[in-house]
Length: 203
Image (cartoon, rainbow, N blue to C red; front, side, top):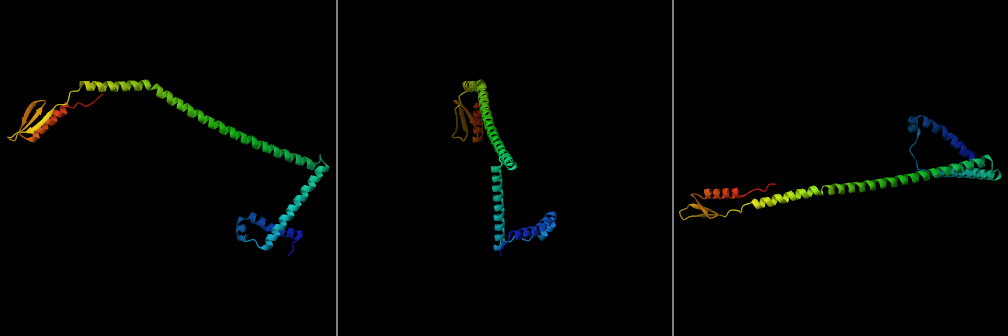
C-alpha cells in the first residue's frame, strides 16, 4: 500500500484528538491506551516514510535559508543565523568558564587540604618537641627512684627447712635456727620471713 503525504497528514490528524484526550484525562489514557505491540511491517514503513519526509523538509528549509543568506547577507535569516552562532559561542564560553572555575576550585580545595595536613603535622611535631623536657624529667625521676630502691634494698634471706629425727622441723634463716613441732608451722614461719623480706617497688 502506498501512503501519500496527504494520507500521512490525515492519519496524524486522526490520531491527535485521541492523544489530547488521553493527556487531559489520565484515567481515560490508561483505559484507552493499548498495551505496547511489536511494530509490524506496515507501521514501520509508515514511520520511516514520515521520518524521511520530515528530514527532506528540514533539508529543503535549511537549503532555502542558506540560499537566502547568500543572497541577502543582511537579511532576517542572516541576522537570525548570526544571533544563533553568537548564542552558541556564548554558551560554549560559559561552559568553558564554568569548567575552568570548577577545576580551579578543585585545585584550591586540594591545596587547602594539603596545607592543613602539613600544618597538622607541624603542630604535632612542635607539641612532641615541647614535651621532650617533661618526658626527660619523668624518665630521670623514674630512674632515680629505681636506683634508690635498689640501693635501699636488703639481700634476700637464706631460708632452709629440714626435718629432725624426732619428727620436729627446723627453719634456718641466715644461720639462725628455729624449731617447730609440725611441718605446717615451719612452712608458715618461712613464708612469713620471706614475705617480710620482699619490699614492693614504689616511686
